[in-house]
Length: 319
Ligand SMILES: NC(=O)c1ccc[n+]([C@@H]2O[C@H](COP(=O)([O-])OP(=O)(O)OC[C@H]3O[C@@H](n4cnc5c(N)ncnc54)[C@H](O)[C@@H]3O)[C@@H](O)[C@H]2O)c1
Ligand SMILES: O=C(O)C[C@H](O)C(=O)O
View 1 (tube, rainbow, N blue to C red):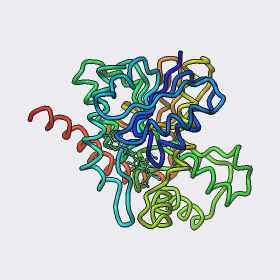
View 2 (view 1 turned 90 degrees about the vertical axis):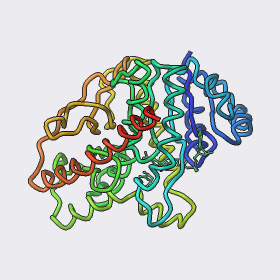
View 3 (view 1 turned 45 degrees about the vertical axis):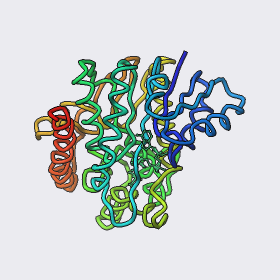
């Protein structure tokens, strides 16, 4: 039995993500949780002739049933940005939503892999971790911030410049998931970019989310490309943990000591996935002079974002 629970399943990301997960033959049960509309989404997806049995769960009282027995919990619940907003502007609403869902996961499926999509990821992942710690079930190998969209974008934008096949273009993107914390490692590629090309690419990868937010003009942020990226990440988790495939690697934001020397305990890095989640978190790559500056800027912002998530859980525990 491989049960995947999607929390926020009726939303802009949740629906196409659930569709892609329904198409994954490794998934045998798909639990769709939201505060609205999941019975309809579940009925619709349930007619697709793939193995997953699909069930809709609605409202807090059904959260436990949605989560019980889950192998993977994916969380795209929460509000998206509108033009002019930063991801951090979503904190006040999304922190509470993620904390509540994480509490459900800690109680009902403490061993599940938890893949957090809700923004601001730099802070929501520490929130999930702190909630799991409070319940005495925290395992840093099992909680992930989904930064796969940055990898997907980087491959697309880089291949547009290099002309290389996009499917075989792989650009590591480390750090976090917002603006200056997004750190593409262009120096790892064999192509040599001019400084102007490099600067334009870094800018586009760091602010790719804003490109979509502007184009959607108030109707939300990336949903379809995020669903694709989220499904790719879950598929990697299942390949490693269910099929026990070796060498499955994705960049993902985890609690790790790779950047601990610089004072951050959460960082997105290249991670080799295994049956228990994180098998190997790769150390920082060797940076170009330019990347050293980007890294310093990323660290400064990450520190603030991470602390904000930790403080939020501590404050609400003290109430
Ligand atoms: N990690 C990434 O790369 C990435 C990419 C795109 C979007 N996002 C983030 O994903 C989140 C969702 O974006 P979206 O476009 O799908 O938004 P959306 O508004 O279309 O959908 C969000 C869904 O969450 C549900 N929801 C709200 N409160 C809930 C709760 N307490 N429990 C369960 N469900 C709840 C809503 O009912 C809605 O169906 C946003 O925070 C957005 O910023 C992250
Ligand atoms: O930009 C956003 O707010 C959504 C998401 O984080 C993205 O990168 O597209």
